[in-house]
Structures are given as C-alpha cells and as structure tokens.
Image 1: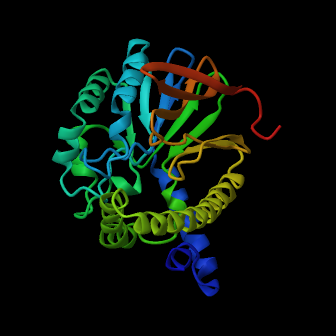
Image 2 (image 1 turned 45 degrees about the horizontal axis):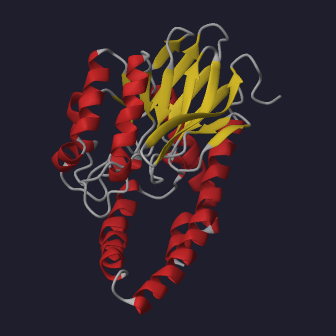
Length: 302
C-alpha cells in the first residue's frame, strides 16, 4: 500500500507531477553537452551496476569479473564507455571509499578509459549520497546528468540520461525510506531466511507481493518516459533506471542492468547501428551475444 501511494501521486497533484517530470527531462536535455559520433567512434552503454561495498546487499559483486572482462574487450577495440546512471549504490553505502575498495578492478579500468578520453558517467538517483554529492564526485571521473550524441552521417540525435526524472517523488525522500525501511529488512531477510522455515515462507510471499507491485511501478515509469519521448520524436532516448531492457520501442531504448547473476545487458553503437547485446558467464565461459540491431538511417517510427 505504501509503495503504491509513493509511486502514484494523488489525483489532484497528477497534473503538477506530470509537469514536474516534463520539466526535469527538458532541463536535463537543455543542459546536456553534445558529443559528435561517427562510424570511427564505437560506444558501449551499460547502466545500473549499483556497485556496493562487497557485502551481502552488493548484487553487483558476483558480476565484477564478467564486467571487467567486458570492459577489457571494449577497451581493446577502442570503444568509448558511457555508464547510464546508478553506477554506484550510495543509498546503501555511506562512504564511497568502501565502494572504491570493493571494486578496485572496475575503477582501475574506468581511470584507464578516462585517461584516453573514452569515458562518460551519467548521474543516476542512486549515485547521490546522503550529503547530496554524487559519489564523492567519482574521484574526478567525467560526470553528466545527460549527454546528447549527434551521429554525423545520419544527423540522428540520441539523448542519454538515467531516466529517474520520471519518478515524481523526491530522490532524498526515496533514499531515506530505502535506508531506514528497505535496507534493514533486506539484511534481516538474508540473515534469517536460511535458518527459519516459517520466516522463509513469509519472505517468499512478501517478495511475490513486492514483485507484483514493482511491475506496476515499472509500467508507470515506462509510460511516463514514453510520453516525454513521444513529444520529441526527432530524438532517440536512451535511459536506464527501470532495469528492464527496451529496444526501439518507438524512439525509446533502455540499456537494462548489470544486476542479474552472470548477466550484463547493454547497448552498442557502431557502424551506423545501435545494437542490443548481452554478456553471460556460464560455467566459467564468457560470451557476448548480439540480440538485435537497427541502423540510424531508419526512422524509429517506421
């Protein structure tokens, strides 16, 4: 009930919430720097790593070796890496230094990409810590709230932003509720579920109820994102935030996430195409899968 109320503003606030969401996207678009891209400058986009401190709640920890392998693959082929927000989990972790220590191999590669001018980090809502700074400014790594990519050959423009602009509620209120309610509960669940059958059954039922409510929330967020994108049909919008991959649905793309165990989801841009890709690690074997792709010269609305 509480989650539903937080996600859906009261009816008399609906118009104000819609206007606020529109304003957030517009402000990010207008302030975003523009980067020219062409067939000689390939790009890889991942989002929602949620790198933590290596503890029980760090869902990215299992994928760290797969992620570094993927970054090495793209670095060797001169790709530019764009992280589409929520790279670091500052809602769970107070000190960025703990994240830096837990995922030192990742940050070593991010610095290497930065030093060759092939790194851009988009700010997501989970990148914002309790002091309202963005992950201690990521140690000087390049940060943007949005990025406009201009493909020179086709004149296609892609707008990259995290997508949390579609959440009407305050980032800081959401973070407070997460830290003071959700995080302690998750810790209790992880500590208790292995030893208490009754607790395990109760947590299973509660998890199913939360997942159903989460699906409702994702549908609402996607509808809000699509509504804004529909009003900007000349731009292809790339975002994250929902953790749900979308490919060429209208003019909207979503990178997915890096949180499924042994799976990374992302988008590649090269040779005049944008492609949905998936990396997997099964029994120690790492593979890159090309799922689908579309050229820039084709209308997103054909």
